Length: 351
Image 1: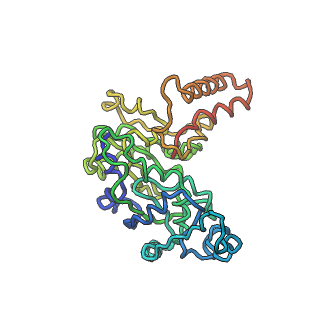
Image 2: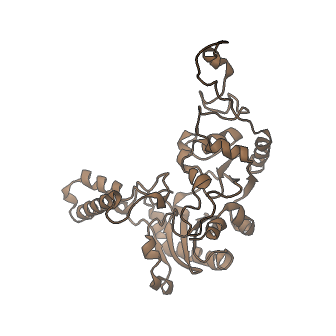
Image 3: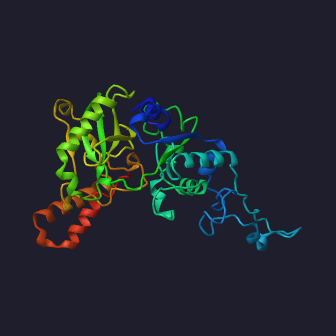
């Protein structure tokens, strides 16, 4: 993988050329001071000073009156540091407020490549839905998965010359409350040919999607031919799409081929087979409750996990796979072991 291929997948790079076929998005370049706030790991958890009691969680707000008991008296020998002062980004906050209003009052955020999916649990809704600057700051500051964008985006590049991009961007994407997870798919393009399509949400079984398999495959293939083929800069890449109830395909994201991108119901070895380029597009769905991968979510980038032959994870997966296959052949052996094997089988990669 080359740095150029990774850069092509930054949302500020591809969105202007595909905006008519994607979801409405507003993009802001972030000041370096805000980036330093996100990567800083010293001192207490502080939200920006503009956050008020009405839109932040308890105990997340800087309250000077709470610090009175900790102030050092003049001449004290105690060398403890004074309490940290919360940052302030008034210009950025104003721009974000205007953008949220222009997107009907609710958005979900992402940086150049990634969204803070690992911190949805900290929000009041349990989702990435944000209606204020404080919502966004909380999700971004709490996220471990965004460390990839901030510090490790080029780690898998053979021609790595940078540790991070020169500029970071915040993409505010319009929030749609009624999206159906079974209608999102990841598409794999090798040598400018669509070679595979996978259900994006593999932690559940959706019979309705399975019933429409051929229809969905045709919609996605036609979208690739009409809207994507030859228009994206890389030879090898992946892209995510969503199919609306009106059978319209919407482009969600682009991702690099391999590295930290999940192959989902494929393996990268399968997708890279030379013969696949001459075959029909392979479309894979979760086809039963037994093939669900309930653990396919983690904040650890896919390529940071050591799954080489002989590694601890390699042996763990082999054991889990053997147990799963045995339980599928002999279900009377016990539901507890089956559940354990099924959970272990898909617990390594992130969304």
